[in-house]
Image 1 (cartoon, helix red, strand yellow):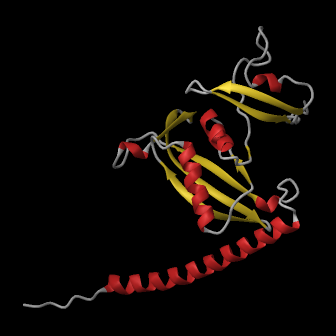
Image 2 (cartoon, one colour; image 1 turned 90 degrees about the vertical axis):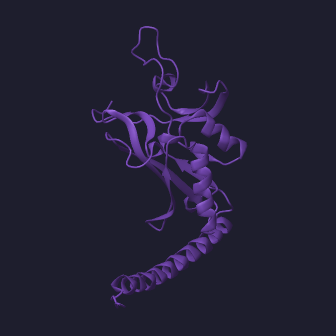
Image 3 (cartoon, one colour; image 1 turned 135 degrees about the horizontal axis):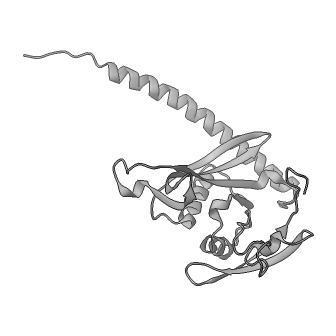
Length: 219
């Protein structure tokens, strides 16, 4: 016997494809306009990133605390510094551009166990390049503050800016501050340099600019 079964799923997929086609077309137009605007910005700003913020891309690393077991594979869980009572996370990284008050996500990557942050940056920049956008300056969050990442960016001559993590002895320690806490003990801000040794035993030197801000108590 032969049975005829209504293919409701096929009809639904057809609608999804039409909607996706419209969305992709709109996204393509947005990226084309952004690419054109950035090219004009580079020309009008003389390629100076300090005078032209539209040439900057930001990369964030988001860690979602996770206390359970992996769903399918151990590689799903990313290890990081303790947060919310765990060192296990579901992690993803995003590369985005802020243009005319709007945030445009150019690339997103699921970060798994064993994936180096250098590889994360490489893949995100590749996604931005596919969208027709090449940054002159990268703004990275504190999750990328590692010696191998800094050397990776320096070797490829990619200008970057990221917050420095405070490590070492605090200024209140009897022996005085050490590590990056030395900068926190300064009474005035300003430029400087800092050299530290990564877990791989290799040294890394960066330019540092200290900015003093008041806390909630006005100190």
